[in-house]
Amino acid sequence: MGLDPRQIIEIRELIKALAQDHTVVLSTHILPEVSMTCSRVVIINRGRLVALDTPVHLTEEVGGPERILVQVRGPRDAVEAAIKGLPGVESATVQSDMPGITGLTTVDIQTAANANLRPRLAQTIVGKGWDLLEMRPVSLSLEDVFLRVTSAEEPQVEPDEADLYMEGEGEAYEDQEIEAAEEANAMAAEAEAEADAAEADEATEEPQRELPRSRKGGRR
Image: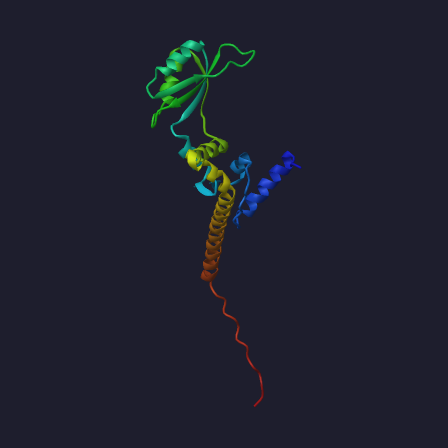
């Protein structure tokens, strides 16, 4: 049974609240929830730790050069030719027209490395007398990041080793998954121990209250 939208929001808020004072390990393949909830991401592929970073840094590192999506009110062929002619444009793909909408051209642009294309792109479109309706960067989703890093880690099996690989992969992968899970748990325990130590240090720095001395009364 799934959760309704209100329950999903409540669960996200609960996890974020717990994360203020605890280390919360969320193991899931529902990557949109990871993007909405988690501050760091660990990707394990075939028992190996292949990625560990914040969601933002992962998408920037794996995504490579910037992608830009623009929507222009202008002739399709002319807009495409003008964009492809700009320095720093590696590729420009015109997306399909939306039904019932004419005169709008949407282009997905892949830039070269370190190319600050957006100012020149805007100047070119406006200079041609076209309307620039939208310009925004396109970032990878965690699903895209997962597919890229795990595809790069696919094992290369020689033909004469294929049978052996298929026979032993079940046990080998199970052992590797256990080791990776233990590694992730150890990282979480270490982070929680550091937080506890920091709290203990703060407590010791507080001024110690002097306890009142008890006086014993008596007669000589």
